[in-house]
Amino acid sequence: MGLRDIGASLPPGFRFYPSDEELVLHYLYKKITNEEVLKGTLMEIDLHTCEPWQLPVYGSYELYIHPNGWV
Image (tube, rainbow, N blue to C red; front, top):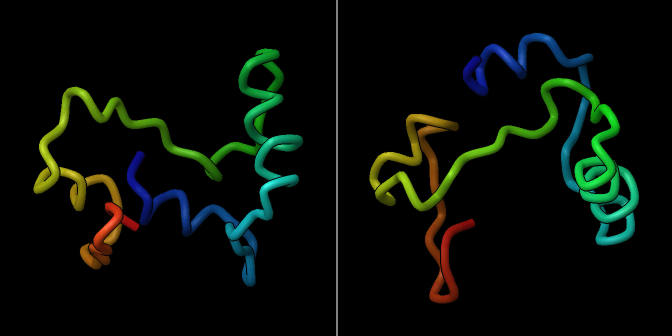
């Protein structure tokens, strides 16, 4: 399932721009306790198996590179 498919399944106006607290409490905590996270909000990628130029395949074709890394 690609990001375009995931985006099509989310409600209109859905945003994913969590605060630090939301990220820890609603996503990371649920991940480590094996609770179900809202399907389609997170996509896991093993960065050790990908080269940087392969990452656009997993998302949009727009990547912004900052001096401190990928965003």
